[in-house]
Length: 173
Image (cartoon, rainbow, N blue to C red; front, top):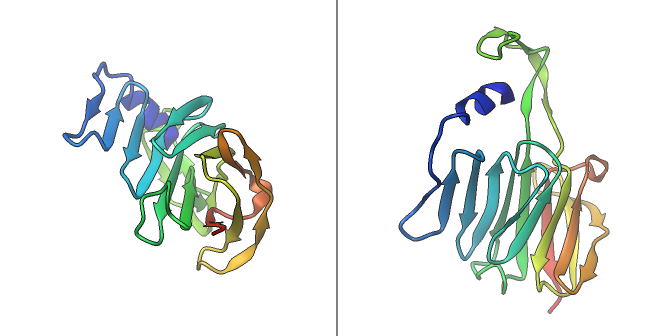
């Protein structure tokens, strides 16, 4: 439950970074940032903020989310011709019941599994022209996503209306 996570964040903790600088954990903000050459993203309470990595900027509205970019061709993200975008937010079984304090599960629920959509946008810095496909959970292409090319890069809108949680970015040669 999101309330339990928020309670855990009330601890006074200094931000921590891996020895390589590729992973950063800010317990006070409740965010983990991943910034490797081939995978970049944000995990945590990023709603209402702008989180930057070397190759992207994440501007999310969803209070708690996971958004990851992964190179599919082994190239660093700025040079990759194919990028998988994976998003996730609050997820639970239908009918799950949690106590008012958020510290006890009263009912574990049943099918179907429900997931809050991630809302906001991702800016792929300097990405140039690309086609973005909406993907089913099995990777099948559902159709193209309308994107915008700006001086900052390729802007991918994240919305429940997109009808998916995964996207494939295919850069034009």
